[in-house]
Image (cartoon, rainbow, N blue to C red; front, side, top):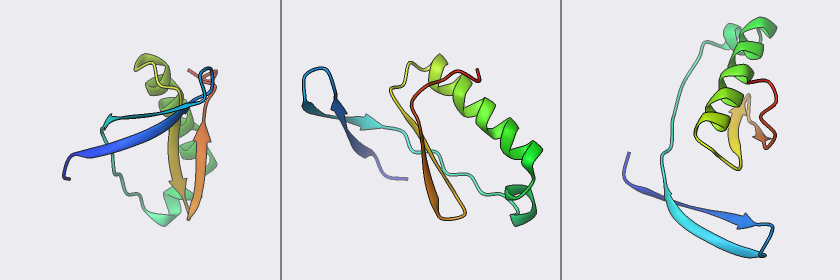
Length: 75
């Protein structure tokens, strides 16, 4: 992947911040994407990752639905 730039809104100041980002692409079998236990484990991982890396938000696309995680309370 080429270097990427991301933008996010600093809700405290109202400013849009531009920064270098790392995009992670992962693929799964369709049957895994519909397995509730696997989705739960993925959610826990995303919460841990977001908390450990001090993110304001982590996003994931599952079956063409964009999900945003802003509170990392499953970690």
